[in-house]
Length: 239
Image 1: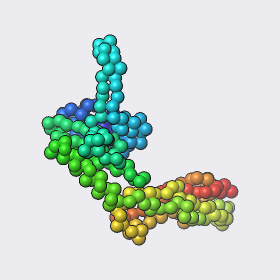
Image 2 (image 1 turned 135 degrees about the vertical axis):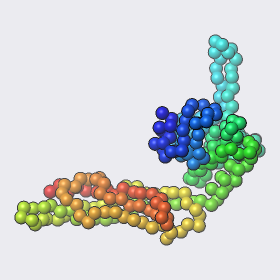
Image 3 (image 1 turned 135 degrees about the horizontal axis):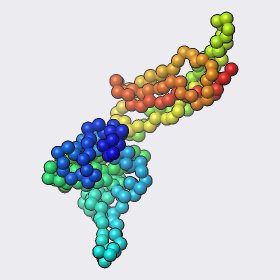
């Protein structure tokens, strides 16, 4: 089930053979896949609560009469630690002999969020050093930019009603964009570097319903599609 869910998120090079992460020849992932999985996980408030909690005490049980502390081992959220970073929300540390030192980190700054994934680093200290460097690079070299403003989009399409005898009557339906697009993009990227590709039919046939998807607007940087926005009808034309 974990593998199936990972592939739904686009993590196609991941295969889980157990839920705990200990070594198995067929248990594998990639840094990119782990970033995709983390991207989904941080949308869950309970997950954010877990990764940002410094410590938790397990209450006594019948077999263990003393409280047991559980401490978060991610050093970048520990005030006073030399690796502390004020923008880091949390993450996950890991180590096995086969995988080496692994570290997944989620950080937020000025409305931007970053995920850094390090696999098979040479040491725990180096993993934190590399993570700090990548966070600095990401926050300094990328800006959160609104590359498409839905409020500025307006189109209309002719709506045709075929009549007996081959003639027809025509009306119009307005079209709006479903949402804005905000992305983290390189700071040196200019607005004119992004092109817009709009796909809309020349005409529609009655009936046309309100909020019906009739096309799409895609945003490209060179040949890479950055985002796609649904184009919907703002009114209906039934007759």
